[in-house]
Length: 286
Length: 285
Image 1 (cartoon, rainbow over the protein chains, first blue to last red):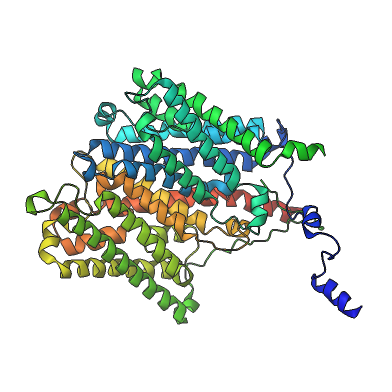
Image 2 (tube, rainbow over the protein chains, first blue to last red; image 1 turned 90 degrees about the horizontal axis):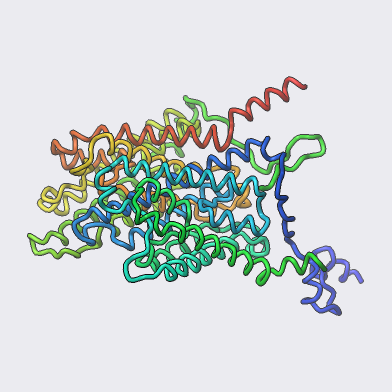
């Protein structure tokens, strides 16, 4: 009897042996699924953290476009591929910059830096409609400014070398471009969902060990795969910023692909994660 | 976003505490070995940084010089140079973060000084040590291969053809903003609390930020964003072209660091409005 009480005090007997551990463990979760965010939350408009989050998204997307489009221009301007960082360097610029910026802004705004990510998280009820729209607007404005600074550095070369704008390459159909954007964005948003999942957080003892790193790597890997097809959008703000500053017909002709594709991909990722992987609606019902 | 927990007495019970502003002059720290150890650490770190990076630059130029037996795609490539800078910052910040804060860059020191995280004395000593370390690091590279060193530009920063002074300055400002902003984010006590006070690889995003900026701006200025790095190479190479443009590599980084300090302290952390809140609380009492 004394031994049993001692065990109870140190927690060794938390799960009595007569009851299967697997069964009782299911009811002893050390995480809690956050409730769905309301569509409209008027109170958040009065909070500085709301406006600060938008500013952070603007600055992050501005820096993202500045570094990445400047890297693209550096590669385009060089006499040959080996005199520059090359296509792989461009992929690193996109993926590495997402890693660094998501790391910096994760605690401020959630570190989206991408309207498709914002849309996916909105569908999963992780942020309000007001916040989602605000983020997307700030991301697009930041992208335009970032590409604008790059053009300011080299106006003639920028226009002559394509301005880093996304277009579907010769030999690929619009359907191929759309498919590439859908699957590419699915990879990214699915990784975002996995990195920010409450259950995974609990498994990692609630220490978010570099959640931004797999997100950055997802962007890097998708760029390795689809730069030859579309120059890789998977980020409508990135495509819009370059298209607006470059402002030529060929950039606008294909532009719809870089909004429709990413938004479909984000929606599929949200459905897959919420309904298939986490089965949240069914748990809520029971 | 998680909100601060409201304690029973109505005060917010945060599990982190913003450290008070560091005094400008702290005579007491002059009597401690930890200050001199930190300065030595900054010197050694900057020496190693310049040695690895400038040696990588010179090696690449030797191997890719088609007129002297090299090949077009020889060497580690510009991408390899960018990796050398970013990767070296990562491991050196990792090694010296607990000793000196792992600045390895006068612009980072300046930004943290503006944010009142280091004293004036410490900031000045760090910058001097960083510049001396940079000179020694590049000195080693020259000593190992003086003719190659002089022939291939000495790894010095200068404005590339086709870019004007304003563009170079802007590139240095924005590039340093990216770096110092990442440093502030990585060292923020609020973030530390959110990570359950586990400093898991904070140096990695800092190294990546350096890597990213090098990818983007090597074609423009060879990428300074570190006045000690530019200074060390300029001193050892000692030609007029690097010195003509040298002011860009001090003015740009210091402006970028100041903007990053302002952005982090007053926009993201809103320390001004928090002070106002404290004032209101005091008035209530």
